[in-house]
Length: 97
Figure 1 (cartoon, rainbow, N blue to C red):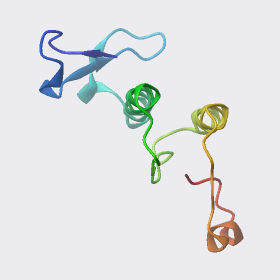
Figure 2: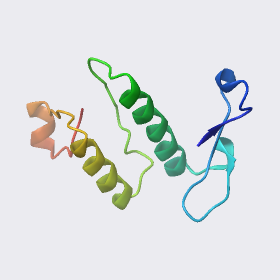
Figure 3: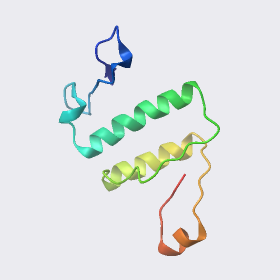
């Protein structure tokens, strides 16, 4: 992921390079690729300055099953606490932060 232009990183434009593809504008990415790029940026910022808590709602909506598992494994590896309300557990909810 790279900011465009490099001398003005706060312009709100980013490019990303999904695996086995070339750099492209975020508007040209699929929903899942946009989600992975956004989560990469979010977790990079979070690693630099950790917030007291982080609320992520339905971040898996555009991800395929393998990317959902990879994201869940990554979140688990960085030591986030996860929690599901009892009502969601009864519905078979996967995970929620």
